[in-house]
Image (cartoon, rainbow, N blue to C red):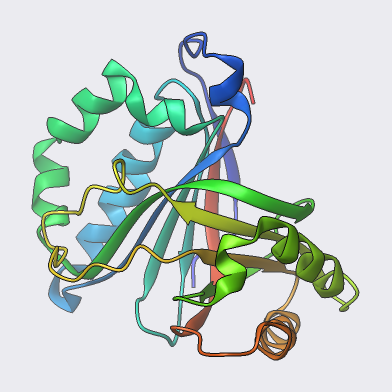
Length: 234
């Protein structure tokens, strides 16, 4: 497992946005497996090029990598932005549509990836944990009720080791699939993220969340923080 670390990057100032665009922060959520034969180069690409490339774009606040030892997908990348407007800039369109050769190679090595551009519709607590629980909410009605998720987040904060929770709501227009992603039957369901200081705390949070939510969930995973790069101006 990689040593946890936080770094910073510099970049040009983000362009001005309307008050409406600033209302909710955004997150780019990329969760994937990778061909084991290319695992080393995949991680080298992510760590040495891709995260910094994205965080240097206007409106991007941080890029964070996680790794799961068990669960449906091994690697998760989260890129926080000031708003969804960050995904509509000329700089982002150029970076997304004109990938570097190294990016083209490693994007093709992804297995069963999912890419979602989301607004953060509910956020409770603060800080970042060493462990992250990811719960896909499927068609559960709580996913469309940010107030209910915020209330759940307050309950989760009563658990030792839980520091924050966030509801991610995918934007259909912006959540363009990755080259290796199956575009047929994609389900752009809401996602609940729970930050915790330990793996047991994250597991306890998953149990409480499932109990409180009820109904069917589309699965969950618990991942460990690898490292984070933050914009110096953030």
